[in-house]
Image (cartoon, rainbow, N blue to C red; front, side, top):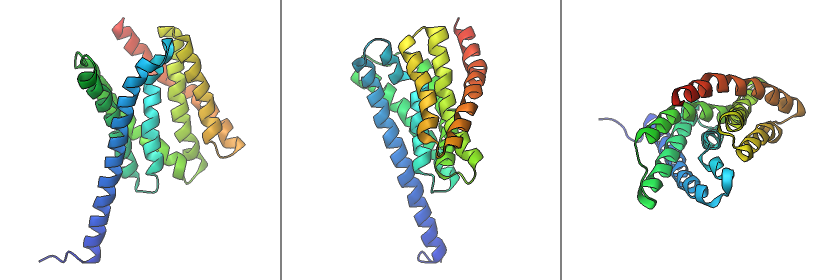
Length: 215
């Protein structure tokens, strides 16, 4: 008969509570933000409403989840980022289905959900690296990834979608992320320097093939 009060059992229960509370909070926050972004599309004027449905903006949720959970073991930050992104998709399309005229075809929710399973863990790690990175490379890589995805979306908005307001907002965010998240002047400069090629690589690898297929 196992001893439920042994130190090992107590640690196991404490670890389980950490996982449940952390992932529940990330999922709940993602659901709320998903509903909010759906509503914001109706609130924001003109081309600005596309920012609410921006993949770059959505990655901030996973990055924030990873940063908040950075003191936990890294797998918690990974799962937290995933839950935040999956929650965003569920909240956005759930509100579209039950609060508006319906979400339509399942294709786009499934595409966004698939992207959430990739971007969520990656940006969860990026947030944890920024918050608790043991060396400068990780503290730079995390914000550089976030800034890079804003740069990629700025290029997409400018060159393919011709949404000038969204393009300027995303490109401004690409610059602001390193300035706001860098701890020193050197880290800010390194982060911005790394973000530029990351944005170009992401655009070439992700956006160009997608636009070719849709065209």
